[in-house]
Amino acid sequence: MSEQNRDARALAAAAQRIYPTVRAVSFADINEAWAQGLRDFRAAPVYGLVFGGFYAAGGIVVVLGATALGLGYLAYPLAAAFALLVPLPRSVCMK
Image (cartoon, rainbow, N blue to C red):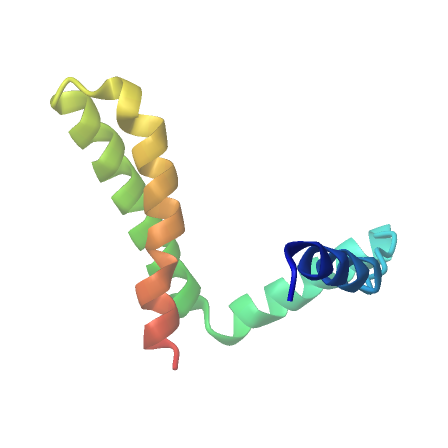
């Protein structure tokens, strides 16, 4: 198969993709999300507080550690990496 045929097929496949429909978000949707979150928290408050406390304490340790080492300019990137990487073990614990 020639290079041009491969490119033409790739373009044809890309043209046939179906994209998702984006719906508008209303205040009712936001209120329902808040209500569901509050219901979940009321069902298991200790679970949420333990993980929330862990994230807060971990973030404080990251910022104070970076500052103590004279790397204050890395505090924000390290805190962002902490926020992205910490949920991974949590998702394994939930299975």
